Image (cartoon, rainbow, N blue to C red; front, side, top):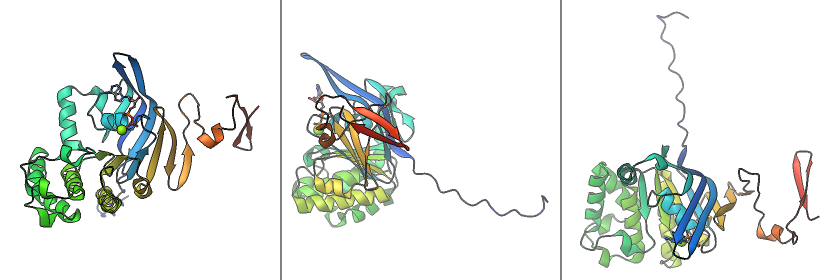
Length: 283
Ligand code: ADP
Ligand code: MG
């Protein structure tokens, strides 16, 4: 190779979006006066950047526990959890707070919990911009994207429930966090307002943010590219790219969907590996 001939620049490698947040073998135990509650029993999950992921499951299945840990709002008991590649378990309380401020947006269920009564829409975003050292132009862009520009001088009490939630998401998305996490964000909205909010979430994902929603709302599941089904503190199944995937844990256990479980009254199964497929049937 001659050194004096300019070599063509190597083709740019598309950056892999990577996980916005991920957890392995995640366990959460609450110690209460009446005993231990095992809320999460070894959850392995990846939440990709640029993607809306819905976390669904019956009440008590561990959705809120998982979301609070992913957001750095609560500590896990065992396992690992990372946000933007940073292992949260290794962080001191101060560093966790700082990571939460810069890399995580969190939206609470009740619109009033996310907002400060005496700050206008514009002031909410100004505060978020300052806290996150972000570019002020970004806040204006977010207000445009989220359809709130015309409400810039409004106080939260004069906003509709849907506008309040959109403001909460705009505020959460300032500074391009790795992940925006929301627990039941459409629960207190009517279906039309909820649908408009879901469009906003998709727009945030298009900005490269990983969006994770705890939800009971079928409309939210419909917009999500991925859905994680939690049951009794474990991931039972995952829906990705329109395929329903059962989850196999590190010990090889598979959680059967309820309709399949109904076939195994004795809770014993015969398994055979045939031509690269596994057949499972009652004894
Ligand atoms: P979900 O959001 O799916 O309803 P949660 O994560 O709120 O589930 O709850 C999972 C389990 O953990 C439930 O049994 C719940 O009662 C229990 N739990 C949640 N938070 C606490 C807490 N702070 N203290 C004790 N138990 C809790
Ligand atoms: Mg909950």
